[in-house]
Amino acid sequence: MKKLVLIAAVAALVMAAPLAFAGDDGKALYEGKCAMCHGKDGMAKTMAKGSRNFNDPAFQKEMTADSILKTVTDGKNKMPSYKDKLTAEEIKAVAGYVKTLAPAK
Image (cartoon, rainbow, N blue to C red; front, side):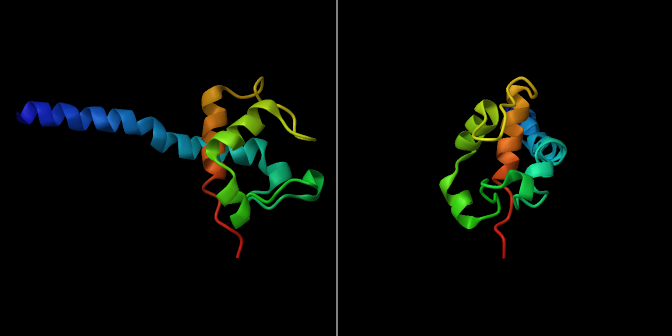
């Protein structure tokens, strides 16, 4: 019984590890690829005029990680597609990180 519990605990940790690292990777990727236009804090810069602020509560409420993933993958308006620049896992990590940006105060 103890072995079964230990195996289940180890399996849970192994499965959760990629999720923990995705947040760190998402932040690093966002800061390296996205922040130049979208701001480190999610506030769009002048070059991204027309883009929504990622730290806007309305944006955070309306946009899902999947819809952000689609935009990063396919591009939209002035924003190019990143499907040839980032892996699917990296795009997923960036989309997840965008969802963590705190609403502006």
